[in-house]
Structures are given as structure tokens and as C-alpha cells.
Image 1: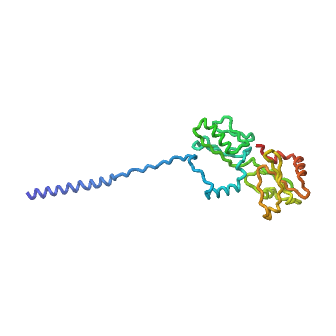
Image 2: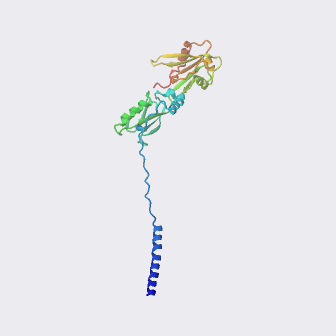
Image 3: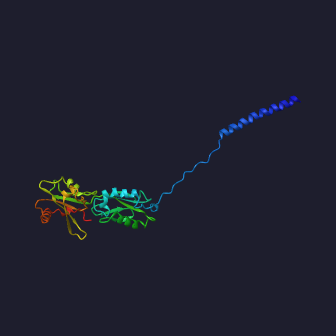
Length: 263
């Protein structure tokens, strides 16, 4: 009887030794899988939901200061031939986003869905933006259009009179009268630093003139003067008069060249 009990105990131990290692191996082969993490897809923000920057924000004030140094004269810039603009419709690129659009001599640009195109001559980027928005509203739900000026090509100023290289030049940034004269090669022989004038058309279409004392500017007695698109800088000599300037301008027949784009 003892032999039978001993035999049974031995068989039980052998069976347990075979079963439990297999269970352990099965657990190693089939580890518990952790639930996979699903990446959250962020919703594309709507530009209308972006909070407007506050004027008292130091970063905004600094940005305005830097921007105004170069482009303050473009705040109300009216487009004309050779200007380069870009049009972007939020969420509709690339079909309705166009970059590097050069304004042609007709001042009418082509744009998708607008059969007759868009006339941009004499308009600001904000006015063009509103016009395109209204026309696209027939095809796109709540279009959000942005028009930007990439390059100013129709804004001109001219320097004439007693300078080395007189003539018209493109105004693609803010420029002082001193820079304008230097860009024209500097003062020529017999030029008078106290016989410098700026001529420009006013809102009524009449000439206005402003005398400039370069000596006072260079000595820091008065602030420098920044030009506006269409300005004519005239550098005279001793004996120069305003009547002589108009006589010279009439004989040169340079009005169309000097005053740039009519838009």
C-alpha cells in the first residue's frame, strides 16, 4: 500500500511539473497588450476666433514702431501697375490662394470664379479684400480673404535739379530727403543746400511746395523729412526760383514720368 501511495505522489508531482512551466511560457508568449493611444486631431483654428492684439501690449507697440519705420507711407497705399500682391482665402488653398500677382497696366487682375476679374487700380488692399470677399460669398460659405502687398512698384519719387543723376525712382520703403538726394548721386557743383524744395499734389490736385533747409537738418536743428509717393525733390542753386522750376519742367516734358502712376 505504501508503494502505491508513493507512486501516486510521484505521478502528481510530475504532472504539476509539466503543466505549470507551460502556463508560464504561455504567459510570456502572450503578454497583456496595453490599449493604444489615439492621437488627438486638433481643429484648425478659425482666424475670426483669434483675439485682437491690444495696443498697450509691449510686443505690439514694438512691432508697430519697427514697421512704421519702413512702411508707414503704405498704410493707405493705392495700388497701381507693377505692384505685386497676394490673395489668400482661409481653408481654400491652393485653389483660391494666389501669390505674386503683378498688377498689369490695365490694373485688372484675374482671379478664380470671378469672370470679369478684379479691378485694383487706385484701391487699398483692404478695399480689394472686401470686394473679393463679397464676390466669393456666392460660391464659398463665409470666405475669409486676406490681401497683402508684397512689393510696391507703382510708387515713385523724383529728384531733379542740381544732382549728379536726376530722375524718377521707385519708392519701396520709407525714405528721407537726404537718402533721396544721395540715391541721385549727391549734390552737383553749385548746388545750394538751402535751395531745396519738395513739390507734391494736394487732395484737390494742386501743387504744394515745401522749402527744405538741408543745413539745419544735418546740424540737428530740425527733424528730417520723409517723402511720400509722388513727391518731387528739386535741388536748386543760387538764384533758383519757383518760376524757373516750372519753366524747366515744361521744357523737359517730364510730368508723366515724374508723377508716376495715375492710379
